[in-house]
Every structure is written in structure tokens, then in C-alpha cells.
Length: 263
Image (cartoon, rainbow, N blue to C red):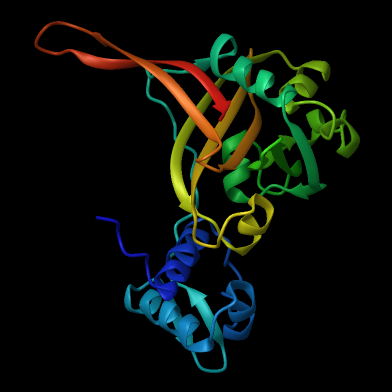
């Protein structure tokens, strides 16, 4: 039996909750009319979504002062414990370079910005330090595959810009800039497409996407790239192999990355 689709107001609620968790609304949420235009819905639908957020204690709605978040979490970088599985250049990163060479890319935006608290923490910089923020959409012959936002320390990124990012995978550009890429720590979760992502990836607002956070280190264990990727699950597959290790009474699954590929 097929599941009933979520009500529109609940889809908007979920998208806004994800954006809130990412720290998108530090200065307050957009007004009702802006949200109506963004999601293409009636005012009553937007109000239901905001009322649910308020009921959940996520936002405060104050007449004359707008809507503000209440204790919204700051995005963090997952830190692997000692002994955790790590992806090395011979696996994950090598596959990603190969995939980059077999797809096309459209550069949406490239600019030097000051590092936010979360970006600075990930790249081991000071808040306010210069970083390059690049936004790109990667596609196959079938259409858009992924929406990628990368942050690179300004000292490294000054060696490449929009033209280079439109021609080569960023891992190749890092190595051409003198970086010896070492390892990466990656997490894969899920999120819903907001209006901007829906437009770039050619999916309906509220569609489920694979969300990838990847922190790339150089050979000296210094972070050199923080990537936020949103992938269409109908065009992207991540394959791994699991093996049992340990004593008979304490066996655990250990993963080995096989490929990250478009389908």
C-alpha cells in the first residue's frame, strides 16, 4: 500500500526545521509573504507550518518584531573517534575525482567570505578568517545530480577561482595548488529540498535528498576542504562492503568503501 503524501504545510515545516538547524535564520525567519512566494503556497499553509514550529518551541512569533529562532542548534562537524573507519585517497576520494571527470559542472557562485563559527571550527580557523565559498551544480547527461557547497581556507584557495572550478574537480585543484591530500571524514544523512535546491536539482520542493558532509585533510592532518553536498538519490549511489571482525562474542561490522557513483 502506498503512503499518503505529507500535507504541504508539514513539508514546509520540515524544510524550515532543517534550515533552522543549519543556522540559516540567525537574523530571523523570512516573513509570511516571502515564504508564500518561496514555496508557492497560500498564506494559511505558511501559517500552519510556522504555528507548528512555534508549538514545538523552535521559534517565537512576536507582533511587530517578526519571527526569531529559539536556541537553534549550530551545525557541527562529526569527529571520528580513534580507530574509526576513515576514507583514504585510494577509495572514496579517488572515486570522487573519477566521478568529477565524467560529469559536467555549472559554477553558481564563487566568493571569498569570512568564516562562520561552524566553518571555522571545521577548518580549524578563527571565526572571521577568509575562506573561499564555492557553489556548484554537477550534472550527468540525464540532468542535475548534485548541489555542492565547498569551503576552502583562503590561503589555499587563492590559487584557483571560478574558471578552474568549472573545468576540474576541486580535489585535483587542491593537489595542483600544492596540497598533499590525505584522508577524508564523511557523514551521510538525509534532508528535504527547499525552493533553491529544488530549482537547481529539478525536483519538487520537499523531495528527499542525500546530504553529505565531507571534511578533507592534507597529509599533515590539516583540514583543507569542508564540503556540503546534496544529491538526488535516484541518480547517486554509495556502495560499501561490510566485514565481520573481532572475537566471536564481540564481532562488529567494519565497512570498506567501494564506490561513490552516479546511476
